[in-house]
Picture 1 (cartoon, rainbow, N blue to C red):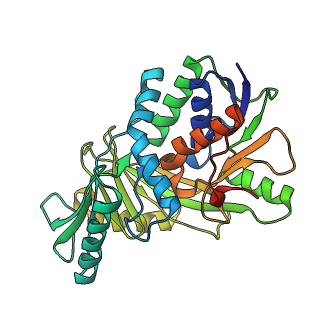
Picture 2: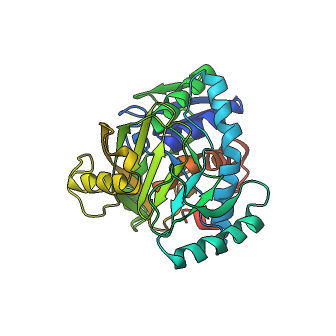
Picture 3: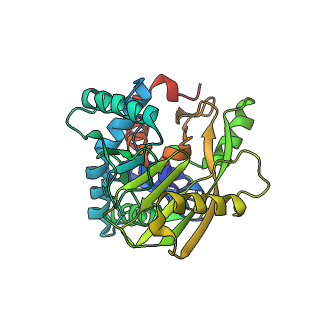
Length: 338
């Protein structure tokens, strides 16, 4: 059994630790702030696919991650005995005009080719349960899933401990060290390499008390509305590069809330149960950063999840476990730190 230390108890850190523990490694996760103290402790949990067009290797990997997710998160639930809030509930997108309808129909043809039998994308007439749609038409897909971030983190901690792993605030590193430390880690890596590798970007989101656990997600430009299994609906999120305090909410979140009510009026009377703000790790490449820490033997980096951390974490975890435990390097060129 190989020892491994993961620094950071967010989505990437805990998923990597679970994958390593599942393969038989002795794992410890160290985070002085506790699980989910950073960007992963939010409320949204939208696992949504890229549009099925202009296909790239990165989009193919995200599709692989979404295909992997049901069994992967079921394994976490089985090991921990705790729910993650995962479900593939699909997504509905209101279409603004005839141009949007035509584009959505073209994407439906793309999905038939690229997604094959995994899921469907279709354009259909508006129904009473749908969000407001100016064109009277919506796009619907069956691939989009949701996950409750805080439930998922608790389940990951439980699964790791069930395999004998440690999740603690401090402790001496044992074995290879994987740094999954979010926005702060990107700043540290930039300083160490003396070049801009990435930075933080603030996001704000909120949760309302409204029970619609089986309802699909709703997506409008810049707006995700995600019904969760615990009787809440999450609304996210802002994207802010200029900010003084990454942990405070403000009027921008109020505006986001109002937009959500305009799109889905059933939320008008739903009380707010949580307001959240945090700093998300945004790599300069706008993608993941995985691999060895340049010039620092025995140290590795897993970072840059930004808005897709939970969606991509299982694939990132498998690649990092391959690299660290088995010296098999499957990290695509676009995700490499060098």
